[in-house]
Amino acid sequence: MAQVSSIADEQASTPLSSPKSILLRISKFNPKLDESSKFMEFTVSYQKWTTVLEAILDVKKHFDHSVAVRYSCRQATCGSCGMMINGKPKLACFTKISELDSDVVTVEPMNNFPVIRDLTVGFEKLFEKHQKIQPYLIRDDSELESDEREFLQSPQEVEQYIQFANCIKCGLCNSACPTMATDSSFVGPQALAQAYRYVADSRDKGKDTRLNIIDESHGIWRCHFAGSCSQVCPKGVDPAMGIQFLRGYLLGFRS
Amino acid sequence: MKESTIMKIHYGTALASVGLVAVHILMRLTTGFADSLSYENVLANYRSVPYVIMLELILILLAVHGFNGLRVILLELKQGRVYEKAVSYGSMVGMIVLIGYGSRTIIMTNMGMT
Amino acid sequence: MTEDEHREGIKGMANPGRYGIERIAYLLMRLTGLGLLGYFIAHVYETSNILRGRMGWDDFLAMTQTTEGHIFLVLVIGMCVFHTGNGIRIMLGHGGVGVGAPARPDYPYQPASQNYRHKIGIYSSIVLAAVAMMYGMAVMFGE
Ligand code: HEM
Ligand code: HEM
Ligand code: SF4
Ligand code: FES
Image 1 (cartoon, protein in one colour):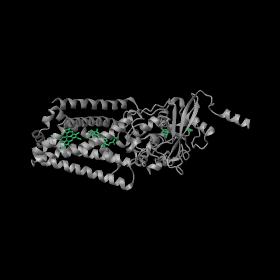
Image 2 (cartoon, rainbow over the protein chains, first blue to last red; image 1 turned 90 degrees about the vertical axis):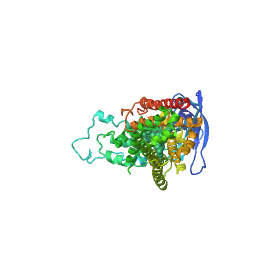
Image 3 (cartoon, each protein chain N blue to C red; image 1 turned 135 degrees about the horizontal axis):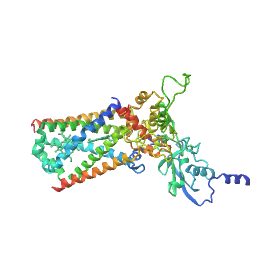
Image 4 (tube, chains in turn purple, orange, yellow; image 1 turned 180 degrees about the horizontal axis):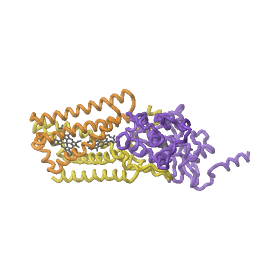
């Protein structure tokens, strides 16, 4: 038994003796059982490099195993761990407690997504809208059919879309968007940015198809360039930029 | 109508009315505010055909722009087939009623029916 | 529906506190747009009093010839100037003007679309509106 607990101690990412600590407030809510959400509070110690995700996992390990949180890569690559951290959508694995500059850290499920339990939210609609804009190269031939060679691109051509290809589908942008806050039919910044990612790809021929898909009453026109999506995006996708370029085609500013 | 057509009209009406509204407001501020609003002055304005054309233009452009803006806000606020239909037709009716009512003033005053 | 989807609702849409000046401009654009529409409708009704002859016109004019009336008109002028200035900025942005150029993203990932050009556009719209309001005030109260 003694050995088991010493292993647990070794694995704890932040030793309890570490000097600084914060109050971590975790929103608890099970839509199947609870009427409303409640906060559970834990005092968690942290180091300069401790992330919010690590603090939550610490709580799971030492205080309450029932906290529901989704994560995988822990390095801002899989897009699973988005949540509201002190009121703004952020990746828990990419946000250090020390940079929040606060003695209290409140974590809640992301806005504008249905809550599954506690900090986890459902991404069905996000993925549905993503698929709706046809997120793949559209053209008549394919590399596999033509045995001549692959489709070539110059570095300049890559630069036109590579920024938008950085999207990890974390949904933070949709959570910050003011239109998304009330409009359940809006395609959203994530999908619109991806529509531009493919339109801007020199190998793609699906521009008109995609412009048609997003030119509807809950399509691209429900963006008002408030820019909140770009301010919260953890990968530098800058959805707002892509959306305005996309709209530039529809307004005849670009061709 | 396609949403892009509607929004092009939204931006077009906005751009077209920039200068017209500027003239309209600056007329008050540069010719002595109270004077410009006196009955004689206003009546004379309404009798001048070029000026009245400008007023009618402002009326039409901004009724279209303003009510479409309202439609946009309401569409984003709540969704549902019946609701959205009501919003679209409602803003259309608002537009037409306002243009009708304003034009009545303009035409009747211009023709001296006060 | 909104409840299940955990949407932020109108409060979240209108909360200007979290996302910088761009979100404040978004809110002001909506408020001034609605305010101007309200004024516009009232204004068309007001001017229709000319059909009631001199008495009718003067009756109605009396409403705006008070201090409150003047302050209200000054507000209308301010809303009009901000909405117009910011509207032109937004239309340029919507066409893809001044929103930066795509590049290879690099930490700390500053979004190029949230740049000084558009911030200057917002601040100048606010300043222009303030100047116009002061000018309007000088004219109306100066008489
Ligand atoms: C003449 C100068 C004007 C310009 C350049 C202008 C421009 C614009 C633009 C570009 C938008 C779209 C904003 C967006 O997509 O976020 C807009 C929205 C709107 N405008 Fe105007 N506008 C003007 C005057 C007016 C007037 C006089 C009214 C009132 C009758 C008005 C009422 C509205 C409304 C209600 C909206 C919707 C608000 C929103 O979506 O944010 N506008 N305007
Ligand atoms: C300080 C602000 C304003 C003042 C004092 C003012 C005053 C007047 C006056 C006295 C008239 C009667 C015709 C004339 O003599 O020109 C009029 C008509 C009109 N104004 Fe204004 N105005 C103001 C702002 C605006 C704004 C911001 C708009 C646009 C949104 C507007 C739109 C119109 C229209 C469409 C008419 C014609 C209405 C009709 O006859 O049905 N005005 N205004
Ligand atoms: S655009 Fe950015 S914030 Fe939006 S889903 Fe992609 S990575 Fe996340
Ligand atoms: S855990 Fe993968 S993005 Fe945070």
